Length: 465
Image (cartoon, rainbow, N blue to C red; front, side, top):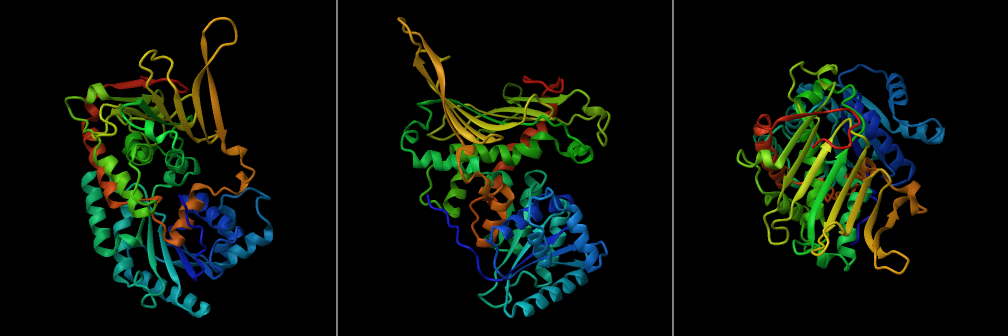
């Protein structure tokens, strides 16, 4: 399983729509700064911020310095200064065609300074309601047309969520598909870029020990958890319209399931890996009005209704647990439990695979992929207790990412996402089919949610159901 680490050496301009937003300062710019310091960005590159606020060049630099999420002393001052030298700003309105023409002139002037046509990467760091308008304007202004024939690709990076249900997702995807080719579209689910989650594939297909057991004959159940200690914090107004199922279930949790359950791809490239992930999501057993009360639990932590921005009578869930099945030959009748929630006793994301023990069910081998924190893999197995009898007890075999000497150089998820966008590798980005099949599974549950009794749980609970 080789993965290209080839530096993309062609001049590249990275345009951030919504540069003054939270995501840019918290995630994008620190990731770009890290890539710059690691010398994996093209030698000639520029970052252009686009937003409606008015800045002079110096005001913009100061704003970025004040809002970039880096710790004091994390980087050499010289590196930060040189990084900022690559940044500039274009003031404009997202819905005004003239703003895009000014942006085009700005990009052309940068190309002239590079003395050649450059690649263009457009990142939509804006609320999803603005996606369609920005994409329309990008397309109609000619900004997404390569500037030199076959030279100078253009790509669009879009953050989740992709739509609000199956209908809006299809509509958005159709519109994007009308404006851009699939090779230009990079839909970000940064969870796919987490090092420990990528290791699920490496572990499965690089170790012949486990793949023969990876099926209904040997696996009893799979439990996927994405749990958080934090509550909704200051996201009340946003969160109350979305809820846990759409916030992380439709994307992060289902992507974890797809990676665990997918078939071995014909080739380990983006096209084949994404195709196999989509097949898993396509074959998820539908949850309907007849089985939802047996297969779904929804919960809301006590005190949620008093959070700022939350409606007093809100039925929005802060926790869910689903039991689902994959209707194919490999996984028929194996339950997959999908669980996520806020204000719980601990924060962790992990996948537990329980192997069958027909003789003694309580003595199962359990393989755990720990996605975060303390990334690693562990296996519970049974050994004889020392002494004259034949009692056995559980022990654990562990691998931790912290065992790597090079841990400090491992890229974080956004570094990986942005690097792959630069080099054009779509493996860690969701395809049209994946988005549609995920919504096909989730949308009916959302519509039936009110048929499931709401469980109230105390903050810091270990179990909700």
